[in-house]
Amino acid sequence: TLESGLKVSLPSHAPSGFFVDLGVSAAAPTYLAAAGFGDCLCRSVAQIDWWMSHRLLGTAYHQVPFLIQEKDEAALNERAAKLAERDIEANGYLYRVLTLCGLGISFTGVSNHGSMGEHQISHYIDCFAGERHPGTLHGTQVGVASLTMARLQQAMLASDQPPLVKATKIDPDDMVRRMGPAVAAQCLDELKKKAFDENAAAAFNERLQEVWPTLRQELKQFMVPVGEMQRLLKSTGGPISAAELGTPADFYREAVVHCREMRNRFSFLDIAADAGMLEDFARGEA
Image (cartoon, rainbow, N blue to C red; front, side, top):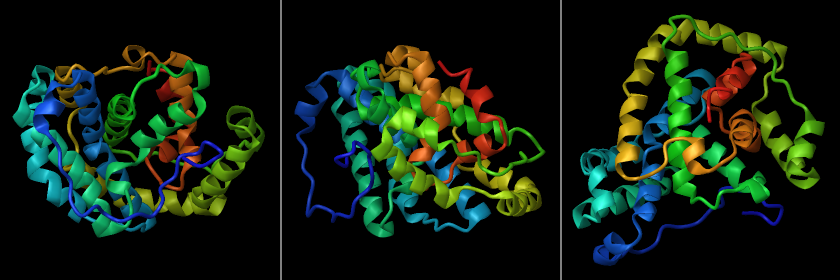
């Protein structure tokens, strides 16, 4: 977190080793394990966002981070409900998935495989909620935000016709009102890097029309049905909605609509916003 309050990724190196006493961890309050699971739940939606960005914009994509955690993720999901029972084996798989996800950054130099649209929602809550913040943990928020992203992605991918984007609308004054001048200036720089002008929007629409049938099938391979994601998260004891999170509905919807302004990572939030769909979608999130 910068002095301005903005959350960013900074370079670092992997630790030489990681050690955890699973007995202590399993005995801890179960909402902590549920928060960890919420952070793991984002894999499918982050992968969908990242692959989409790669296919449509040519941004870098790496499969290795997903490969190294694939088997452990499946084992964790099978034991998700046991986290609420303080099961040591389930906690072991939780730590493995969290650690392997972090280790993935050492292979790629970026955190995109575990941080796309869903993390932007959580970061917006942490940065701008102020007194409205319910005191929830990062992973708890990511779990709820992952369900939001899954609903958005799966609704858009259900259509055999691609969305049609227009030039990106940017309101610097509104960003200052919501974020304050210092953070708004930093976020505006990030947003401009991925914003479409009319020509870029037209080129994007042409590309989207060309690859949409194939892209839909590719992305569905990464997808976990939102109902299954919700079942898994609920089984850990974690909240599954903004209301259960304790975040005011109007502010959560604001986070869904505006969090994409914070970072130059292109997600389905950006497509939905530029297609004029995001605000309508956000009204259903609470």
